[in-house]
Length: 441
Image (cartoon, rainbow, N blue to C red; front, side):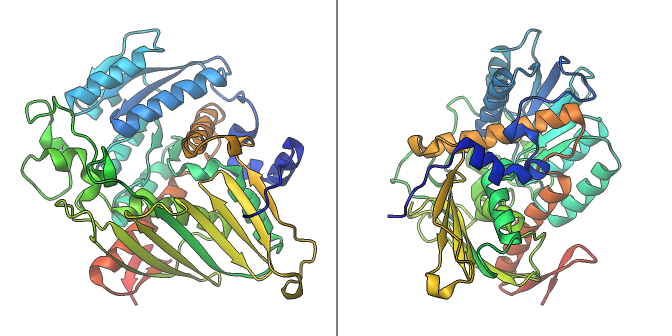
């Protein structure tokens, strides 16, 4: 068992102090006073208050209360009547005025009282909804992945650059200080030369377990009568009405990049952060449906190998048949290894003394939050989400760039799309930096 050493608050903040520029004041300090004024209320809307959207609403309300940020949800849009009513009920818990519900996100965006919007819809709908939010001049928090395809992402980035909108993409590990501490260690050469990194996310479920492997529960009242099916299909190929496709959309390539965009994007995004990289130069991918033969089209087992111009390789793996180590990253240097598990604990393990140059490297474990060794995995997940939302709300006030801005969100989703395309084509693909597109090797 690895040694655990508690780190004082002062040491924790000192090690991540240089983080402030990257992570922002949201993680380490209280609310800032920005151009809106400290007491101005942020009036929020949400597009897609379903399973994930409802969670984001609740966490936003909690952050606003804990950090004393005046905020209320005043508008909710969803094409499923059930989620819409649920979203209105969640908003009304803290709303001081009437909460308006819409069956079309464009109607919500026409509401001039809405300052900022959360998008938590299936990923194939993100791009057009983002473009609509930007055109309406609203600030935006969009769930990961930012977009479904690279071409969509390029259009969104172009539009965002012409606007003054604050856009935070939901790869929330960009608001966890541990990754910035790891980045500084790599930059300073503390773990030696890094040529190899790993990322993984494994899950296991019992047969028949609710919500297993993206088999999200279908509400009893859901039907073709209270779902606007054509709006769900959007840019995807037409398919007849299907409750499984609607509520379990991650299982289908038409609406999701599967493991690539639900899980891999998280670990690969922070490997990029720690290694000060933007995009891999090439990727090969492999996977299949080995266990969950339930009509899905996307893989339940996945591997990708990325090569970087910065001089390292990153291997990613995921499967839905084991929960070993759940999720994390490993940065392997010639003097030591950094391992970050569940975004909660970072352990630095030196190489044997006779093999390393840095004789001062010690075995240590750092925590986020600092007391998380007493908590469970969900505590760490919620803490990461809350830190990311807090950063977004702070940036709405200050107009500063958030921790995961639109360009960073684009590269995270582009990496996922590139890996999935390599899988479908069965060959190695290369990233063209100049054209910002994928080409065959």
